[in-house]
Image (cartoon, rainbow, N blue to C red; front, side, top):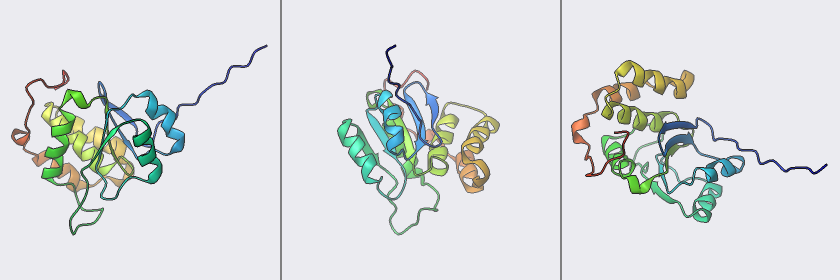
Length: 169
């Protein structure tokens, strides 16, 4: 009897499908790389203030993935809420189909990632109850009311929609 070697595919913490070719998660580790490789990523939007760890940087280089580090804070700290400018810069990347497949990611995939996805849902005209339910599902017991307030007050008119946007917009 011949043995077949099975590859285990383990998604990163807080991994989720957002839309076709658009995903969300926390920072992956080595166990998650085979799973991440299967996504065929072209782009990572990194929202945490610090750089991804060296293993992630090596994975990005090996897979020829573009990493966009938007989370750099000047004079702030990691618990500061995400800014409107960061959201708009993220949308410039997210709404360009040539960047897909793509993943939106921060350290744990809760707050910054959840805020970006929440603002995307608002742009897609989801109702606030559904947006907050999705945010809370990924944030768990660490929900930040300031992030929900940010999503609620986010002005979608500020977003530049490309000529040829993704079909899910």
